[in-house]
Each structure stands twice: as structure tokens, then as C-alpha cells.
Image 1 (spheres, rainbow, N blue to C red):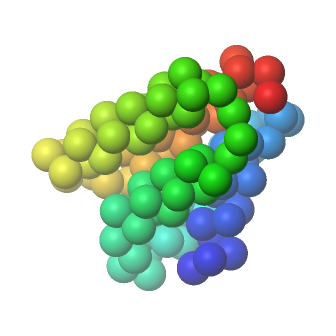
Image 2 (cartoon, rainbow, N blue to C red):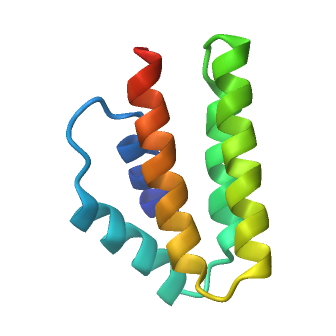
Image 3 (cartoon, helix red, strand yellow):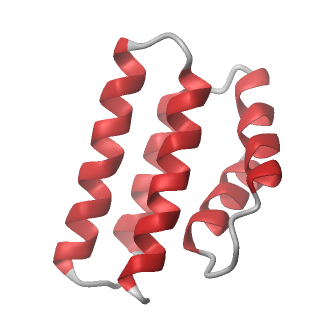
Length: 98
């Protein structure tokens, strides 16, 4: 599980082109093993909290995670929200020019 979660986080912070197929494979591995989606959200949140970056950027990332975690709680297709979160965070990291 840690390998999959770490792989997802590496996709988020990577400064290269988003590999959507790899991302989907990692997310589906997590979900098919019945790993709670909240574990994914909290893992990503904890990794972001460890990063050294501007407070405003970190706040934006935390708010984005909270938004998608809330959406996943009130919807059925959890995979869609996890995938959308990762894509959105990847976009944000690329705009922060870290």
C-alpha cells in the first residue's frame, strides 16, 4: 500500500507530463484492495504538510484536499474524486513553480 501511495504522491509533485495511465493503475490498486479513500487523502495531506513551501500555497493544497474529501463523502464513485484530486494537485504544483 505504501508503494502505491508513494507513487501517487510522486505523480503529484513530479514536474513532468502527467501519466494518467499510471495514476489510474495506482488508484485502482488501492481501491480494489479495499483501502479506505480517506487513507489516500490523509497520506497526501501529511506529505504536503511535511513540504517546505509558502504558506499560501500550502493552504491552497490543503483546501483542495478538504474539498475533494468532502465530495467523496457525499458521492458514490470514490475513484473519480481521488483521481480528480490528484490531477488538480498536480496542476497546482506545476503552477507553484517549486
